[in-house]
Amino acid sequence: MKPALLPEPLYRLCAYFLPRLMFLRSVHGAQIHWGDIAIALQDFPTECQDLSSGEFWQEWMQRWSQLGHGYVSLANESSSEAGASMAWRSAAACFHWAEFMYFSDPVQKTQMRQSVKECFMRSLEHTELSLSTGKFMHGDVHVPYYLVLPSQRGVSETTWPCVILSNGLDSVTEVEVFAFAEQFLARGIAVFMFDGPGQGINVGCNPIDMQFETVVQKIITRLKIEPAIDVNRLGFFGVSFGGYLALRVASYLGQQFKAVVNLSGGPYLSPYATLPRRLKEDFRYAFMGGNEIEMQNIFDQLALTIPDQSTTDILSIHGGLDDIFPVTALEDMHKALGERHRLKIYPTEAHVCLNYINQYSIEIADWLLQKLAKPVG
Image: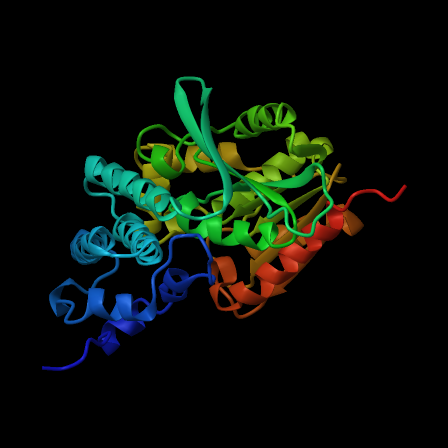
């Protein structure tokens, strides 16, 4: 007998994205703990330890899914509301990490993402979080959303500023995005989170809309009829490919936003052929694309022209070693936009700068708080 340990070879293999599994400390968002990683991945078969293989992610999925079902049982058996809530949160996170890079069975992936939502909502049953849910149609796609208002205690606001948050390719609203959202809620900023076409629950069911600003425009229209939201104080935040979407929103809808945050996106992507195999599958799955020629054509269509001015303030956070969105493109954009674009580069970090997530999440939220402040007088 021995305690559960993460095998050292597997630790080295997964060192880049292990910080993502821990992510930010969250009050309500779905979350795991280090012990979950050790339990799920102990004695991982050595013959499966190739990140570019389907066998690795099949084994990974089965192990995290099993742990998720264990938490479901713990939630159902708990004798307290607090215990059940914590177990449901952990179950939701486990099901997400089971599927986040699993593409072999679209039906099973969608089912696991549905389990993330169901467990997450069960975890909130006895909380005081001011959360409302709904959905709207974008073409023939159902776009579910969460609108969360800050706590009313000690605050004189009658309407709230609001940040719209966007997923990347393989994140889910209930885990990564919700963790960021809590930073804004803590500062008295409402948040609107959604699963657009090709995002969240919709990934693999319909492709990401190439004109994603049309989705965001519908969100703005929805917020205009929400009495608790001050639509004159809107911000937008996107992570990873959602960061690219943030830049797209700034380009097409900038006049409707006080400020936009781009976390590790860029105006254009690295050539499709240069991406790691699993990342190629990630993009192909989200865009429901075909061969490399077709995917490169999609990449070419996504490329944004760097403008010589901006109609909103933009904050970009980027890693100097990012192999998905070239840092040189961000530097060129910064030169073109000048004072309306603030760029922070971590020279030794890769995509999403995971080692600095705690530090820059504070800076991002504080920056947006300043930009969305109520005008004096």
